[in-house]
Image 1 (cartoon, rainbow, N blue to C red):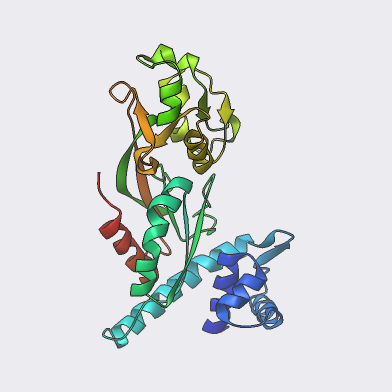
Image 2 (image 1 turned 90 degrees about the horizontal axis):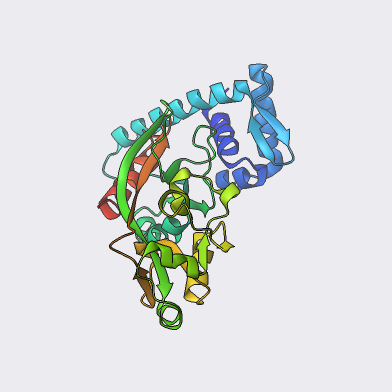
Length: 287
């Protein structure tokens, strides 16, 4: 066994796909596959299940992953000690984020981060749901709740407010809204109930239990587009509201939520994770 083989092992464990891992380590897939098979033979253990969806860690693979990440962190510390003036963090960081946060807040700042750390590559995964930190599907997650796992480190990053929004033209051409009961006379837009990935997104169920939205989407960006097109009203984060969108019943319905920065304890010591965390809290934290 040697460290180079373990680096290949880590690349496959994180990327799942052999082609993606090979691209990360700048080798052809045949070489990577052969060396991982050699590692398995040397250990006398099967480290991956070769599935149609990709390479999934076996129980033996998960145990080796924890050890290999510790070795990686130690190598990183040695390099930093060896030449603290010239060492720069490198590698790939996969970040799983809520869709609206990823598109509206984080994405515009990533250019600033990569300019500061040119040797770090970013995989930004945003959408309806989060990748699993426990399964090593991502290095970092910025989500709506604090992890309950003892192996995941979570810290409050920021808070944000949400309100009901409508396009100004829609509000001018439809019945006036003076109370919650008036919302029954309007087209409402919400998430698809059985596909909601976090209870923190059940806005209507918690705050307007007697109102049923007529249009539903798993995408908060699609919901905003619907509001902008004049299709109806939706509960949106304030940071996603554009100029032509106006708050509805702002004194009566205001929802507060939080963003949590989380990472697995095994990757927390890595330099690339440390610098991104520092960057995130410097640029994204706040009320």
